Image (tube, rainbow, N blue to C red):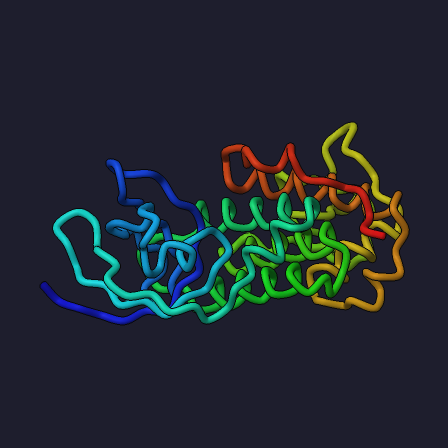
Length: 244
């Protein structure tokens, strides 16, 4: 059976039998990979702790008929324990890996991989508020998948902005002529924050207050779940309390 090496971040795991585990990975070169890690649930396992969610590892695998098999794993970045120690970071990371799982398939997506690893690193370091990192990740990952939102020009007719009507079904803000009856209007500050999260303007994002972040998060959540065409189970558990 062909053997290959890959760098990957663990998205989720499932028990298999008495001692094995199925590991779902987002890899640097092969996209999403599902593989069996044999014996990792035994006390004496050499690499069980290296294959927990949010961990980044250098892996050696060999191709199987249905699932590949992991036979080596070396830790590249140990984000799991640092993220799990903070509830806000943990719930945000859980949404991120669920989103990555839904957005990526077997084809390689280096940009999605680098985006996820960078977001997990930022969470583990507390570089910014966890909800800001999450919302920025969601907007960017959707953009890479082909659903880039517009927060300035009209998403439907491309009329020059700024515009205030926000319609997630149409891809962002729309002009008065394109807005359906009753469509919500966002204030200028909320749209500015959304644009900052999309472009990575962290100075503007960090300066926002809690109420503004809450309004922006509502838009991001609605936009994400609409375009994924299915709910994110982990999103309801996200903590919106700002870390002290």
